[in-house]
Length: 340
Image 1: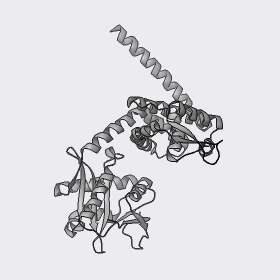
Image 2: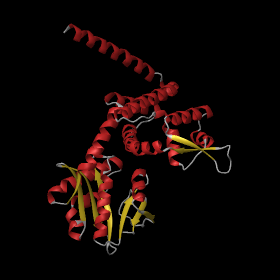
Image 3: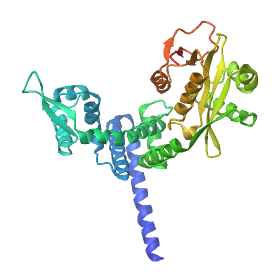
Image 4: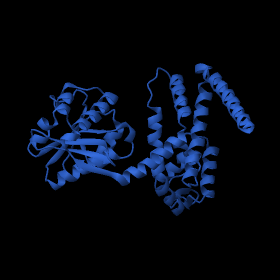
């Protein structure tokens, strides 16, 4: 018992000392912005290394920028990497040497200039890319979640960010995301609309609209009357279900143009965003449109949703002009998918 209290005292003492130090650094204000950014950067690098170690990935997070450039280009020089990253030549050379030591890259002579060395991924490097890409995706989604902050200054932003790190470490959040993503990809089920799911259709969409925009009268009308505006007109509503929980929804709503449907009212539960559930729903809609010989799908969106626009393009949607009487005030981009 005495041993327990001694250890508890040591822990509390260490916690209070660290808390005072952190508060002191936060109290410096804008003049200490460089130190604050450095601390956050070093913390995130350490936490990312924990993630790599957890999943038995032999990689140094500090090598990521250099490795990613080599991965994205079919042959690149040391000078080109240096120019892209805007780092010092010694720093670039050091990163390349470390990647060489890990046998993740290889050097080949340039066909036209034998003095020039071109850097490529090795076979080991290509295998690492396949293994590590899902982890990078989870890291990216976790960073978005942690840094989606409303603040009046960068210092305030950092204060809130570090408070989030204290509540849940960056590595823990990433590992949870990876595990959840793996489980959800295996267990997500797309089901059809039933009257008992009407409240889910409404609630999921209202939450999404209030988070990213605001609820327009047209939204309220359609969401409150899915039978009237969608089902009874020959449209469809689908839901993503994990176990017994409805976690996402999407609708195919008939438009004035014959055999043309609006892909609309897509929303995913906040606890399940970033796990490709929206892409599952979209692929299901496209498959349904193909099976039922739709002429085309239309969607309305806003360019501030960069990730969503990227995914739409990935699935083959192209931008077309927005009509003057567009039903959505928030819309500034309209897209269509014809090649069904």
